[in-house]
Image (tube, rainbow, N blue to C red; front, side, top):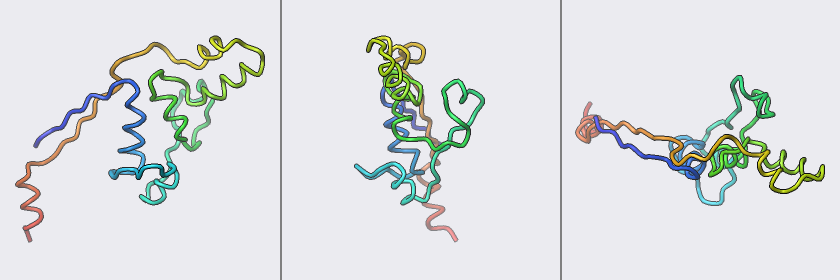
Amino acid sequence: MTVDIKVIRAGQMYRYYLRETVVGDGRRPARTPLRAAQEQAGVPAGRWMGRGLAALGLAPGEDVTEAQLRNLFGERGRPPDADRIEADLLAQGAFLNKAFKAGALGRCVMVTGVDFVFRPQPTIYLLWALGG
């Protein structure tokens, strides 16, 4: 058994998810909308789940959008609906920097995840392919 280890740095997590996981094990074709790519791959839309959704202004079972993934796993780590939060505050007359800070989560981190891919030895593939 071999293992590939990839460190995922801040700002790369949502790109990784959009390219590698939200359409199954395949790669998402360039410039294809997320939902269309999921339908082509036969993968259901991601849904928000968990106890902390109310704090983020989300409801269980809502579809996960590309913008929400970018906000949550992007460089700054923002609530999934940070764009709406900032727009609401700006509409109420808040300053831009206050609206931006309201749409931020915690502190900036350099490494946001580690991906481990376990693979059998190449001889196992040959045995599977040539075996009866």
